[in-house]
Image 1 (spheres, rainbow, N blue to C red):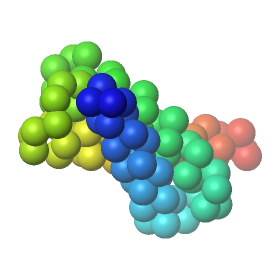
Image 2 (cartoon, rainbow, N blue to C red):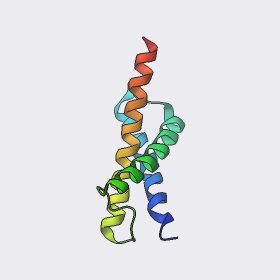
Image 3 (cartoon, helix red, strand yellow):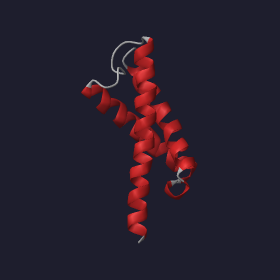
Image 4 (cartoon, rainbow, N blue to C red):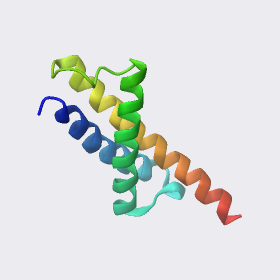
Length: 94
């Protein structure tokens, strides 16, 4: 369970980060459900990627630094994926 909890935190914070990015970038928004799904994917991928690089402490135990690292990496990953999808969406609309 201790190995799954950081991933769950990253997925939840990714959904929150995706919705926050969608509300800030109205033209990139995919709607609440789309932002949540993309944020979950981005949060999971971003959290794992940053964890492998050693930037986020979200791959270890459940100390405070690990939890904060999981939240930050998941939220940033979700927001970044929304921004990338928004740019692709704009490019295809032209």
